[in-house]
Figure 1 (cartoon, rainbow, N blue to C red):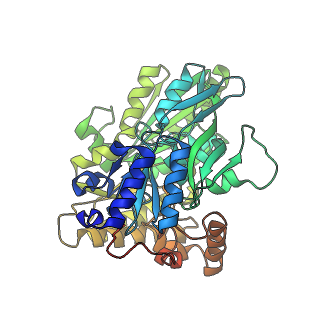
Figure 2 (tube, rainbow, N blue to C red):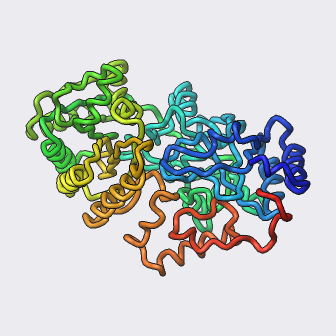
Figure 3 (cartoon, helix red, strand yellow):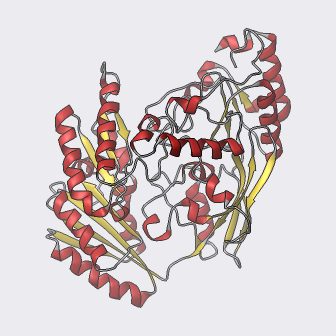
Length: 482
């Protein structure tokens, strides 16, 4: 990495970055870059430099400069992504949005918030509570993930069963394209004329442009909330309960499942109140008017008891509900008490296929001798099998990736798809042909080229072999590694 500053061209480029964002907001030494070579996935890729802008103007200037010099760029939020989306390509830099973290406006009358991309998801939700409002999408990494990253991956979360994923809450955004030009998609209203470019942009995994200002929809806080914890002897009976609840015509605000291995991990590090001998637990949350919650709550409780639980708990007070959710929110981190690494995939299957798919996932676990923990959004069939391993063991990573691909194949064979909220990134790009033809992917690439014709933004992601990524015609000067 020191070779980057060993040539005049590299030093000049670094100097130009510093002139735009300030000396302290450009890093390039290897020891400083170590924490930027990975996100929450198993992939690695050290950037040549990381630039920390503080405004749209600075982002635009940095992008214009990298475009002129033929340098690939990756936008980076909090680095919590789970598909390798924030990993830098060879010779690329990262633009980090940690300094662009301001809540610019909350319009209580129109129930909107305008924010910068580095704002943490939970910080916006907490701030909105002051006005009797909330931001509904709540990924498990809610306390750490940033809203710009949520938009890039179209992040979900437990409460997206009822309220929809990120794309359902984005009204408008200011975006910097690969050549540094600034455009606006959408607006402050839910409906705008023309193509729905805000919808196309959300979930594009940083390959279309970098959002620098975002207007989001807020919802009123519910009058009443009730949370149920159903404790079951096995996963099969818990899956039966999921079908029973939905079969009653009830769409809860959240419907989550945690299996026995995940329960063990959670109870290893905290007392979430989950019985360690349980085969699985279901968390079901209802929100709405008090009378509605009471009436539907009685139906939910009856449906749970019909499915053979050993116990059903009900929590209405805020602190009781928080205690039930603490285990679910902390489950992934708790897996570190069982193994030093996990490989998390997020296939989606029809709810009616949950039992069969989880049985096949268990068989894959037995086949490879790999512990697989399941903690997932049962209500919408978004599975999160966590394959546990130790990357220090020779061949362990390769085995895990192979087993993960088999899990994805099982999901697709069940009528599902590759990802519900984590994105394709590097992790699943070679699996895209399982669900899309070459013609399908060709159309997607043409859409991307309408935004980023030179493929300078997050190249090598989403499509097999980097979607035929070709280095730009204009190359950096000889000896320059950026």
